[in-house]
Image (cartoon, rainbow, N blue to C red; front, side, top):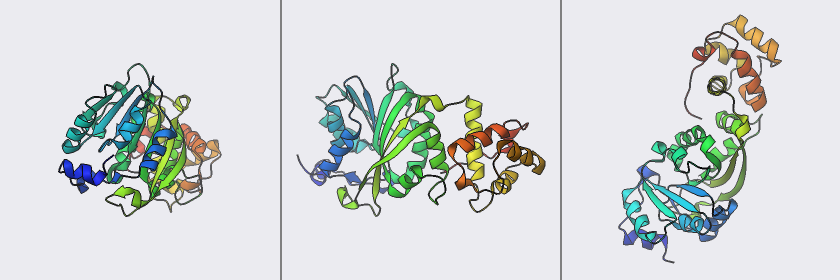
Length: 287
């Protein structure tokens, strides 16, 4: 097998910063990622950022179908040439943020695998969460700092919005860390691979889920402030909040990072009894 650098040179491709391109070149690591959640012949895999197709080829050995998403038209051409004789591999040009995961396998749920570009990890994660009913599980490579936040437990400085929102719907675990030397060009950060398995019985109604998300974002708006102060800043009156804290058993003097996911569910449920709660809470973006 030719090296990544040789393949890039053959297609006259230079890594582009605007695409966040850093190609995983270490074959043992690639094979380990592919076997973390080995897809079966009945499964469809959606790979985010297929690049030169090294991981794609590993996934195609067992999956019934692999949809290889790639935004760079230069790499799309390379992928189409490489997998022309692979009927199970479909190369799809385009941006993952515009991709409809519900259409990938209308008859069942998909496995999502990918090396997520670090500069747009946040919007990609939220996009994937929107399609959680179409995804069974995910194996994602992220910057280690973000993986720390996603897998964090309550009480620490890493625990925040991604910890709560993803744990609301899924069980996550870190599978391995990947050194910069495993990539070309080498990033300046360590990467981590996480496994995310969605639990479909954790959903409420759309209105309940929207309020839960807004509650979490409002609570973490300013980490040094108490729940009471952050929720007051979101538009709730003091007397309303006193009732919420009394009924929920959650002290208003606590800070956002001390609440469990279950406690956020209780808090959002109590806020729902306040007229106009959905409008009061800021729908803040970012994790």
